[in-house]
Every structure is written in structure tokens, then in C-alpha cells.
Amino acid sequence: MKRLIAAVAGALMFLPLLAAPLAAQTPDKAAIEAIVKEYLLANPEVVRDALIELDRREKAAAEAAAAKLVSDNSSLLFNSTRQVVLGNPKGDVTLVEFFDYNCGYCKRALSDMERLIEEDKNLRVVLKEFPVLGQPSIEAAQVAIAVNIAAPEKYADFHAALLGNRGKADMAVAVEMAKAAGVTQQDLEKAMASGEVMATLEEVYGLANQLGLTGTPAYVIGKDVIPGAVGYDTLKETIAAVRKCGQSSC
Image 1 (spheres, helix red, strand yellow):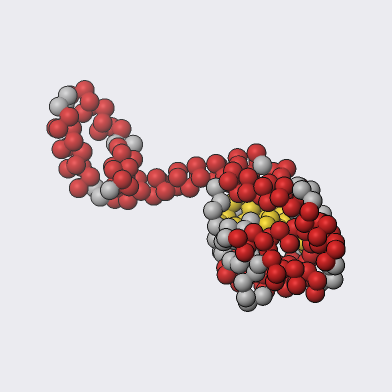
Image 2: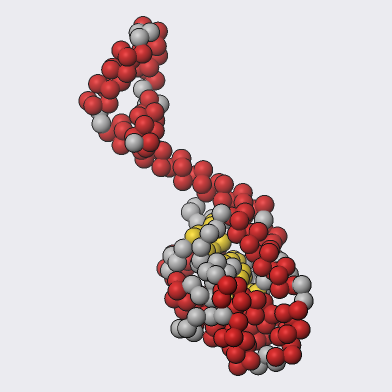
């Protein structure tokens, strides 16, 4: 109903020649509404055109708002000291992924990310630990951040193993994965005790809140915020568009 009302309102924009004389000659609101209704019933394509225009404007407004949010938070989004960078650190396009180790969609998207990194030697990937699925996810993220602090060169293998694991990720599982990747218990404990683990999570939660993210996976490419597991093809097409013209559509 709201969209229909909006469509009718939009349709009035297409009736400047009709509206002006009506306002001058017919002060009765009911009479004006009757004439407009008659016109719309006789020309229903006006409503269709108004809906198309409404959708276009809403999309443009949403894209502009997202681009501003990305711009306002670009330093922390793309160049924070509390993040993991995979792929080419000097790549010409950066893809940021917000993920949760217990997110089924994130697990399935792991192969998409690995494929993109393998195929695109100019792609820079930034990973943001965004545990949204309860305490086990928070624990797994804490261990992952500790791994990146203690042994950043081992993070990629740890990340792939934990995200690719079929069982639930929690503190115990993440610690075992970290050890398997070659990180010592002592180094993990030292990193976990530092304030950087919580500071990293707080930073990511703040970014996600600013961008309006509530679930995982979510991506930022160029100026675009892309929620959901959109898949390899969409990510690849968006990366190509951003590389070509700085945004998802030229």
C-alpha cells in the first residue's frame, strides 16, 4: 500500500500540465482526486513508470549513503593496524570481508575467496573478525586475533582450516587449530592477554554498526557495501567494475 501511494505521488510528477490548471480551476480536493484517479485508470502505465522511477531513486540514494559511510570509515575499513591482509598487499582493488567462523554461508564462501585470490594477482583482501553467532564464535574470533598477533605468517593456514572445519568453532577447537598451524600455547596465551584482542573486536563491531551490518558474510568493495553470500560471480564482477571505473556500475 505504501508503495502504491508513493507510485501515485510519483505519477503526479508526470502530470505537470494537468496539475496546474486543476489547482487553479478546481479548488475542491475531492474533484481533483477524482480526475487524477480517472487519468491513472486510463493510463496505468504511469503508475508503472512511477514505480520504476521510485526504485531507481531509492537505489541511487542507498548507494550514495553507503558510499558516504565507506568514505567516512575508509581508514579503519581498509588500513587498520588491527586486520588481516591476504592476497596482494599492494593490490589495486581491496575486498573487505566481515565473517564469523560459525557462519555456514561464510564457510561456503571460503572457496570463492580462495579462488578470487588465486586468479586475481592484483586483489587485496582484508578480513574482519565479526562474530555474531554467540559465545563460541566470539571465542574462536579471539583465538584468531591472537594468532594474527603472535604469528601473522601462520594466520592464513589457520583461518582456512578453522573456517573450513565442519564442526562448531569455539575456544578449544580454535586453540587446537592454532597449534596445528604452528602457533605455541605460550604465544597464544600472551597474545590473548593483551588488550589488542578486545580492541580489535570493538573496532570491528563499531565499523559494522556504522555500515549497518547485522550478519555475515558481508563485503565492502570500493564504495559498495554488499551484504550476504552473493557468490563468486557477483564478487568477481564487482571487483572488475571497481577496477574499471571506481564503482560497481559505470
